[in-house]
Image (tube, rainbow, N blue to C red; front, top):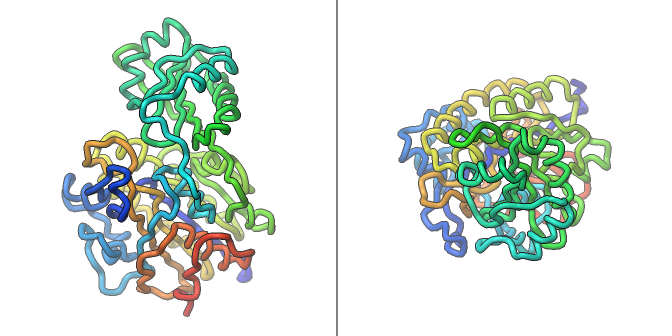
Length: 392
């Protein structure tokens, strides 16, 4: 790699919250601390590499070993935007802080939304209220097989989820009606439409890996847009393309599951001569947080931790690695939804200082502002860069 090129890797450990935010009570999330509560429930976590970076030194973290000489700079971040969902968290990291939250429907979708969905798609729909995805396909899957009507449901987040059996509705048709719904639901400020294909028979239905998210578009240019406009490569790994409505990316790299995402990050580092790699490790949230599986969450953390050195070894002398999260999803609380929490901030690179305490940042957008300065592009409208704090 040419010495005049540099790369930034932003790795989002989806839902790794590190303690309730001051306004957590507004979201019924008092007592949430995804990291520490997982450790309490599942036993001591073996996170030697994240510990070496400085995870245990972050304010509010008590479950991880504190090291005297961390390899990275460290801190925690508040979420400036209202909400606690994936889209809001990632957008804020990229410089877009929302002033009003996405719409949620704790009592179910109103008739005008469900009627509009039926009219525009030519399909019926079942349910239309909040539900656990795995539970609702078991409960209504047989009726879906008999009628062909997709199962529509939501959660505490701003989502319109559409579940359909792959033998009843081909996946491409499910994607088509999801796109139709996406356009219609823009007017209702709903963050994501999620296509949820499943397979199997009554009593043993199982969601497949062909989930696809259709996000509302960011209201103004993000960090990704600004980098791309300057000819700086932006590679999205995993569900990043879906989160940003496929905007601002020069390349989208598909991956299912944490280990495959990390494989693709390593592949991208081996071949990318410059630019920004943004990756989301979705399993923590999707497979463990939402299912209140603390033991599974703990295993996944330890597996991801073992992959950190492999990524660090692929970094060049001017590259930077940022490890963070987008919200919490504490699997030890009664709720199965996201939690309003601080998120960790670890920043590592050969050209940067080690062991700098970055304190408590007032916005996730501080990451985007720092990466914008790192690449020399126009400042973002939100966030405060910490680049100068970690430069020698």
